[in-house]
Each structure stands twice: as structure tokens, then as C-alpha cells.
Length: 445
Ligand SMILES: Cc1ncc(COP(=O)(O)O)c(C=O)c1O
Image (cartoon, rainbow, N blue to C red; front, side):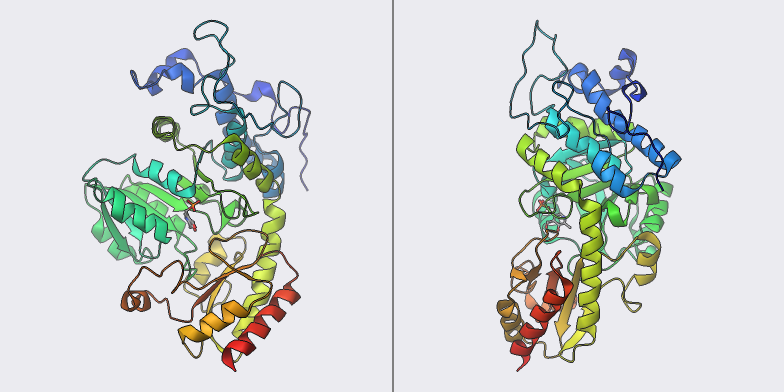
């Protein structure tokens, strides 16, 4: 039972917003590149520090993710009282005199709709600072720009392909060194750490095999070696796990997926607690400029407001399908973190509040043609890339997301020819099961 007063100003009151003194601003000033004032003006502060207040209040009043998804860091639009932030479709803002303005100068640096989203992101991830970008990859790109040539990153060997491509095809050329390993192998992780190591990059659950890494353990290793732990929380969302609570320094999202939730936008996000780290990331966001527009910010905010309701149904439907598939005679294996035999099931039980809406399975007859027939016979599941929307999607990694990997390497990584990945949507579970049952029949006859 939540007992908290939600007044006309939203979930926090204006006086709770801490305004930094001008002397503090100097700490963040990157002179000659941007004016400290333009980044740390009162409006921006109101938004960035709302996350801190929310985190405190969430703890004190035991506020749940549902309340945070709807109200976290939000307040009515100050100029009109609009409950939802307007789409501030503007690139610039009037100045009464040079430097005299309402806190907004140029929309790459600050935009009220984007700020409302960034504030919501900070609140739901129990962070203090949120940053929104034009895509998940743009957010990852910003994180990599914290590093310098020669720095080393330890990353999981089961990463989203686009992240792997960005690391190996772009940042490796700029002198960053990446080690891709099994992050569950603690000895291997520790063995790789040297004085050039700066970051651990983890995605959990992974795509498409839903492997689970122990965020708490990785957080302890990171802390004892002064590394930055980044967790891509796209698959789990804060409904299922909050990595900052488990020791991560940065949470990253492809908001395109579950947070947006309706397959109608491409957007990325970062959330942090540390002020210094936030200052560096805001600086990169403004300097590199890979921000999202106000319309997409609005859509993402609208999506987040139903995150908890959607995630609950995603989890229920995925469980129903996992249990149907595991008992089907044509199915060899089902990858779903809720099964006791699944790699990382014990950790998932500890660090997640449910097992998510994603699962993969392979056929007993591991033939690519059978997988093709299956995915082409589905009527409710749509054959498409991406995930996390209200509609169920099916994908065939061998010919779609992982087609660029040579077959031998792909098989070594555990991605068989017949592996099919499902993003289970919000339709009626019985209809989804029927659809799969029918397609399995056609594929195996
Ligand atoms: C786990 C994960 N991280 C990052 C990304 C990249 O996000 P975006 O497509 O929004 O750039 C994706 C995209 O599929 C993803 O699945």
C-alpha cells in the first residue's frame, strides 16, 4: 500500500529541488567548449535533481515501479498546467538580453520535452541523472567517448550485434581495446584486469540465448578495481531489475524496445547516480549532439507510463509459451531464464523480479528450412527484427540478426540453424500458443 501525497506539482514539491551554488558550477565547467551556465541552469537542475529526490522518496515511502513509471520526475507543464509535457518542437528560445533567458537556449543542449523524459528515466532506474539519445547505439557511443586510446574494456561475448559492431568496427580503430569473454567466469574477468582496464560492459539477459550475468558480482569486481560497470538493461527493464541498486555505474537502454513499447520510435538512454560521471556524459551528449527529438521524447514518455502493466503481461505470456514449447515433441530446447536448468537461473531468481518477455527455442530437427517454414507460417507473430513492442515478433537469428557471422562461429556461440527468437507481446496467450502449435505442425510434417 503506497501512502504518499501526490499534489498538483506531481510527486515532488518544487522546494525539494536543490539549486547548486554558482561556485559548484565551476567544478563542471569545460571552459571554451560550453558555458557552465548553459548546462546547469535552474530548469535543468530542477530536472536532474528530481531523480535524487525520487530515489530518496521511493526508498522512504516504498514507492513502487508503477507509481514511478507514471509520476517519477514529472510535474505539470509550468506555462500551461498541461499534465503531459507538450512537444516543444523548437530549435531555439528567445533571450530578453544576451544570456537572459528562461533556462533554454538551444534544443541540442536543452529541450523541455526531452528533459521530462530524462527525468522519468532517472526515476524509474533509481538513478539521479537521465540522458536521452537518438538511438540505443548513440547512447552506447556516448559511453565509449568517456574512454581514451589505449583504454581496455571487458565485455560479454554474447552482445547485441550492433554493440559488437560499434566496438570492433569503430572504437577499436580509435585505439580502444575490447576483450569479449564469458562474464560469468570470474577468474577470467579478474585475470584480464590491468592498469589500462577502465570498463566492464554487460548485457543481461543476453540476446538471443537469454544468458544471465551476476550484476552484483560484477559490481564488486568493478568497484575494487575502480572500473566503470555499464549494464545494458534493454531486455529486463527497471520493472525486472535496477542495475544501479546492484552496483552498476551506468544503465543503458535501447528505449526503442520495452520502454517505448509500441514499435513506433528509435531512442536510447543512459542513467547514472554519480554527479561527476553525469557531468561528463552531459558534456558528450551536448558536444557530439546525438540527441532525440521532442516528438520521440514524448512518445517514449507515454510508453513508460504503462511499462509496469505491459511488462507484467509480457512476463505472463512468455511463461505460458515457454511451458507450451518445452513440452512440445518437435522442440529440442527452450531458452527462458525461468527454467531451473537455464544458465544463470539462480542469479535471475535473485536479481530479477520476473523472467521477461523474451525467449528462444530450437527444433529437434535442426534444419534451417524447418525454421524458415515455421516463422513463415506464423499468423499472429510477425516475422521482424526488434523486440519489446505490444505485438509478438518472431526472428530467425541465423538468417537475420546474426547472418553476418560465419556458420561455424555462429554454431560455436550456441546459435543453431533452427534457433528462433520470440518477443512475446500482449495478445491473448491462448492465441499465441495456437499460432505456434499450428506453425510447428506445418514445419515438422
Ligand atoms: C540489447 C540491445 N542493446 C542495444 C540496442 C541498440 O539500440 P537501438 O536499435 O535503439 O540503437 C539493441 C537493439 O536491438 C538491443 O537489442
